[in-house]
Amino acid sequence: MPTISELSGISISSFKFIDGIDVGNIASIDGVDLVTETLLLDTAYGSGAEAAYSVRKLRAAYKGAAIQVQRTVGSFPTQEIGFDVNGNLDTATLLAYASGNEVGVSIWYDQSLNLNNAVQISVALRPIVVAAGGALVEIDGRAAMTLDGSNDAFTTSSNIVGAYSIFTLGNPAASGYYADSTSGDRQYIIRNAAVAGSFSKYQNGTATSAFYGFEKELVAYISNSATTRVINTLLSRYTKTESYNGDFSEYIIYTSDKSGTDQTSIEENVGDYYTQNQAPYLLDTYTGAAAAYSLRKLRTDYTGFAIKVQDNVGGATQTIGFNVFGELDTVSLAAYAGSNDVFVVTWFNQSGGSLDMTPISSSNRGQIVVSGVVNTNSEGKVFIDMKPSQYPLGASISQPFQIVTVWKAVSDRRLLNGSGFDFNIQSDKLRFLIGSSITGSTNINNAVINLATASVDSGAAITRLNGNVEATGTIGTSPIPSNAIVFSRLNSTNWGPEESYEFIIFDSVQSDITGIETNINTFYDIY
Image (cartoon, rainbow, N blue to C red; front, side, top):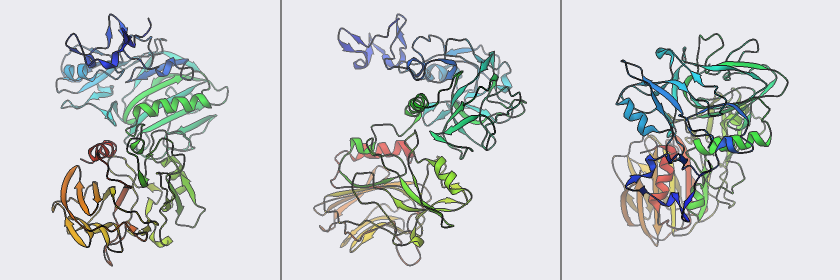
């Protein structure tokens, strides 16, 4: 049955309520699906799946549930959980059923229409979709399920035989979470190490021979030979003695080679759904940036790199771009690093201008990899350790201007200074100096990531911290000078921020600073 996108010329999306019922709770009207976008399995590039498991809707013709669940404690009947009007897992029904209890997944339904459902009969071996206490398992705000790394797994209702392309989305919690054997294996996930065999491996859109990091990962695993695999166990080792460890959301199997343009399109489709850094990006909406440095993509039409790096042994420099999630390509970064330390030679300006940040000397470079391990915080976001850094801005920026920066510091640090201009944290106070001082809150927590903004227009200045106004005042009409230093030491012993994520200078005071802060906070989960 065709999807209805309009009623009497009015888009369904224009309605908030139909006959007093919130449309967000309606999946269909008289059996007609309200999801209007083309779903992955309905596209030319995504068609032909032999089995498709996800917490989002993948095919318009699929009318069944996403998962079947059951509480893990007590004798409760199973519950079918479908999709909401937007094609997401119906978490409202799921949480109502959970009623504050832990819930496991008994069946993960195959949306390919081939009836290759993934099943787990044993309550003790089921992946968990609602944690004890009633919290949803999520990956960046999208529903997921978590496996214990021991023996959680699914078995398929019928063997899947043939050459294959596999696309998975997960957020692993530990090493050894992926596995593949070249002899008689009955599972299909990929190991966090080099894997032998006639197939190609991709992590977050980048070809790789080994898998790096413990973060949200889109893994593609594509046979490039006539090799045939039998698949009847998902998310565990073929010996069934070890399972995937961490959160998991999507698993699609094709019995065909999906490499090339189909692969790229599938990865972009998955990336668009599961990313927090969705287009339109920050600078698409909030224009007028004179300089914009970040470890995520900030502008849709920016085609350059994020950073240029060099290792501590004097190897050739390497440019590092972005992955399918619009985040730093840590796969390429880790592959370049090996077991070495890596430092940032250039932090590229994404605003379209020429103000790339390059340190005064090699000894003043920020560090992004330590002994082969990419710097990430507890939320999995990559940062540059700027403690030894001095990056000249390179051009004068006149008032009005607005600075937006994401950082974590310990004690006194400068975010930007030079020739009478100083934006810093000193004695746990946010300070903005041009001639006279504005002192912000005295309760800055330097042990956590912060979002600080500073706005100046005709000498009138405002400082903000984590969404709140901290101070206002008058500071003179000086510009940001061309010799201003970004992330420098405040005195002879205290250097720049311990963690730096993003630094943007707008050449105007943005009227919707709350919108900018919301965009940043959504991605970094600061406050």
